[in-house]
Image (tube, rainbow, N blue to C red; front, side):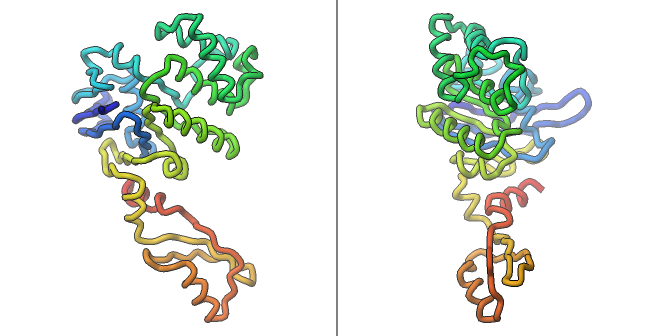
Length: 284
C-alpha cells in the first residue's frame, strides 16, 4: 500500500512565486525517504501543505488512500510532524506538552500518560518530565518535538530537519531512535541538509529543484552515478592538497603511484561524499 501519493501538485502564491510545479511522487508504506533540496526548492511548502498550513493550488494528495481534500481530518490523523521551529509553549511542563498533544488527536488521558512517559524514556527526557520546557537545551527541545509528534502513534512521520542545531553525539542517538521507529513499521519522510543523514537512514532520495522533482532514486542508484570522488591529501611534508579521482580509480593504486613518484602520503580522507557530488549536480 502507498502511504503517500502526490499527483501533479502545484502551488502558486499570490506574490507570483511558483513554489511547486507538478510534483508527483509516492512513498510506500514502511519506507524511509529523504526529501532534499536547496533553500527555495519547495520542501517547506510541501511539508506545510501536508500538515494543513499551506493550501495547494491544484493536484491531488492521498495519505494511506484518504484524499487530503475530501477528508482532510481523517488523512492527517495518520500524520505526525516534527517541524523545524519549536512551536510548543515554553512555560508548560514537558510531560504535559506531550500528553495534551494526544488530546488533540482524541487519545484519552489514561492512554496518553503512559504512552508519553514511555516516549520520554526512549528519548532520554525522563529526568526532565516535570521540568518547564523553557529550561531545556536545544537538543532536548528537539527530542520533545519528536515525542509530541509520536503520541498519537501516526503511521506517517514527517521529520523536517530533525538534526538541526544538535551536536554530533545527539544526532547519532537520534538516528538510532528514528531507525527503531522505522523498524516498527512507521513510514518516514525526512528533510535534511545533512547528506550523511540521508545516506545513513534512507532507502530512497527525492531531490527538489525550484519546485520540481529532478531525481527520485534509491541511494544505491544515486551513488552509482558518481563520476568522481574528491579527497584531501596530507603529504609527508605536511602540505595539504585536494585530489579528484575519476570513477573506477582505486585509492590504493593512487597512493602507490605517488610513492613511486617519491611522494609520501600521511593522510587521505574524502572531501565530499559521493552522494553530495550527485546531489550538487542535480540541484544546480
